[in-house]
Length: 389
Image 1 (cartoon, rainbow, N blue to C red):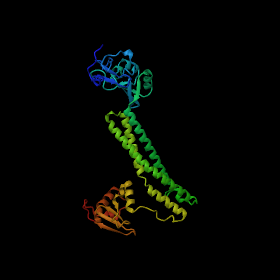
Image 2: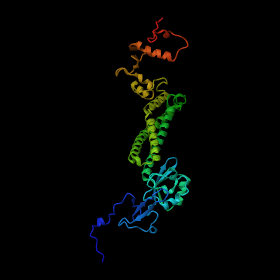
Image 3: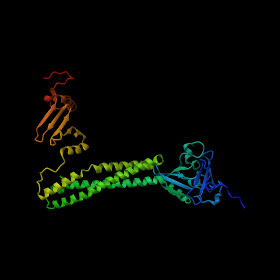
Image 4: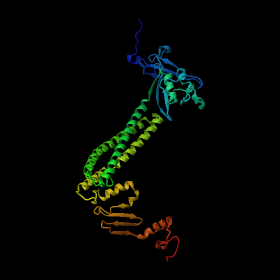
């Protein structure tokens, strides 16, 4: 009767520690340790041994399936319509090299089989492949899959997850862009220059009522869409950061493109002044129903709010401001050394030294000379030392 083991049960089932060239394939029913024995040169194939993880005894290759032997490959999109393919357990041997033969687009990727990196001319040799190679995504990829039908190929889980998030973000960005265009179309029809606002049809009131109702619904959708954009953008950014260097370059590039698209979609959506569009359409309705005349002033925000909105789009207006809180209907123009306050009745006051504008006026005159002399031409230029006439 065999002698019972004195080791605790938990220790009996713990596999020995693996070395750097041993890989535990736990994706099969009975796990197998694949041990990679590299060749001394890229011109020769390395080989694999298969071990029982419980006692590290060598297994008979004929008793193992392709997946048992470690023929499980992860792939992800590479540059220029290629796939990067990586063997997950063990290294590439003659069994892997045979399906790769004759595939003209196949190139070994670092690290290589052998002690040193081979010349680039040898990268096309299947024997130079350690675990990773690149192949065109078209005919060569299809041929490889047919030749190696017994192997298991799967999209890299990391890339697959990030690609899914990027696809979702791109869809939301597209929906937001379409919604933004729809609201702009409502503005074009119901705005001051739109057909529904200006023609004399008796149906104007009905059209503008419908436009206003549509705008309310679209505005609610837009607010929700902007929040979705922020959420998917943050999720994608976080996933890309978590993946770091493990993310393949092609997927990383796609993420950057989608993030740029979502950013543009957010800017476009947030730039819409839905409240102003609604006020304009409502004013058009009031004009159409006779409640106000067409020349009546449109309902607008306070001048300071309108200025801030316009200055975002037109930086040249940054020289304009409101003099003070209790002078909301006045406009202040700031120029070099001079402030001009324009009142609602058209009068204005100038504060500062108007002579400080002389230099600016001289520069303008020099850059765009008039064909006909004027009295401004006779102003004294301190640099020329001329005496005024």
